[in-house]
Amino acid sequence: MAEEPSDVTPAGPGGRILIAGCGRIGQALGERLAAGGAEVFGLRRRPEGLPAGITPVAADLEDPAALAEAVPQDLDGVYYIVTPGSYDDDGYRRAFVDGLQNLADLLRGHPRPPQRLVFVSSTAVYGQQDGEWIDEDSPTEPGRFSGQRLLEAEAIALGGPWAGVVARYGGIYGTGRDFLIRKVEAGEPCQAEQYTNRIHSADVVGSLAHLGRADVPGGVYLGVDDAPSTQCEVMDGIAELLGVPRPPRGEPGSGGMRGVGSKRGSNRKLKASGYRFRYPTFREGYRELIGG
Image (cartoon, rainbow, N blue to C red):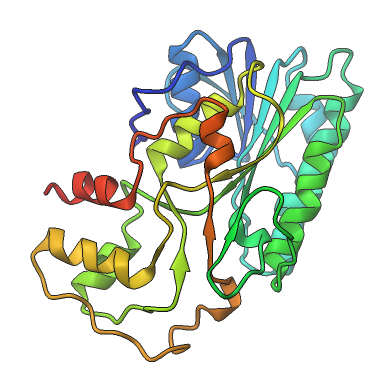
């Protein structure tokens, strides 16, 4: 089911828009843009079953010849929202670096390249471990292959003959993304020292529509809500909404989270660009999800 779009954000870009990697977020975005009058193309290996209003484009981003035959020309904007086929270094390289490079090379050769390209990245590009505040100008020194490959892809997105946008999202939750709810229900421990950054899937869709607009400056944006919090703070809030006991506290360092970092993200730049959050903190988002 597509995510419900934000109702407090201006309409997204118009014109001819390609969404490369048209999964759950891409489909929700495509429906939103199509409702606003855009002509939307959704690129997937198997695009059967895309929502009405999204024209299917069957192609493999790892196959330049297939891309050249399938990708329409005269595009006004492109979104790159892919999921790796495998969660290892090779999977990340192929999905984010090779796939985006293939598409970027093709778009550069079009008589009229797109005016804007939006790449969906992640806070995994940051390596901070001790709860430091981060923003778009903070050092990006990831300790894992995922962040390293995403940084390579970001450079491709920002280096073309278009206004490049990189959206670095924190942990996405929402309909069908209830990992922490299930942890609380199962009585699993939380990590009191582990800061996390979250964003509701409806705000991912809303912010992507916003960042695709020509009147929003290009560059890097951090996509997190107003309340970076420890894992225990989030899970305690979920437990209260569920009416169950607070989760037990795990031993420091026992949660296997050290490698993904611990940091607090600032969304000041995204909000200054004009985006208004539908769910400013995890409290509003989980309250609606749980039905409190």
